Amino acid sequence: MKLIRTGVVAALAVVLASAAWAAPLKLKPASPQPSGARAGLAVKYAWGGDPPSKIQSIDAAKQMIGGAKPGRPLRGLDYRDTNEGDPVLTFNKAFNVAADIRGYIRFDAPGIYELETWSNDGIDARIGGQQVGYFAARQPCDANQRVEVEVPQAGWYDLRIVYFQKYSTSCLMMKWGKKGGKMSWVPNNVFSH
Image (tube, rainbow, N blue to C red):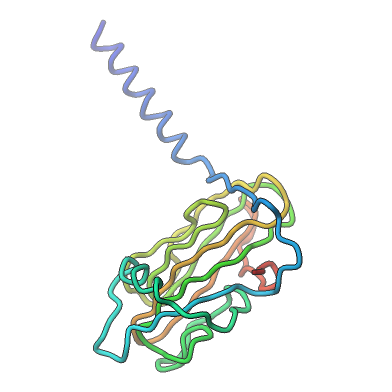
């Protein structure tokens, strides 16, 4: 009997842990809500030098951004896959670039949303205190993972992204949609800094 109870308790713990794991990430609205914000996202860049100098991981990019310098703001997160040798985002270099991106994203209605970041190469993206995109190493322009988030109220949410591009082409994009609905690219007009 004790063995059966132990088995039932263990099975229940697995079910509860699975349910908790599947719960949407609850975002915290920016407090205070920004007023007079400018369109786009603020960005600082650090450059790792010409090849063969290389940024191999998101951890290396995070170390580099301590000495980053302000760049021209991003229009949003709509930077499609480039041609090899094209500048990264708004920076004037094409290789070995780390970016520290800060600002806000606006959700016009509460609810459960799905978010999906795309990057070439690595990314650590956070919105409203939750990690919504992560890829530690190098990859071609591709989706990272899709996450569900709970937006408790309409308004602005803090956005922080560390991104790096080693060499070849670069991209940085995001998709969103209400849970169960169609995903679309996030429009640039919902970002501010």
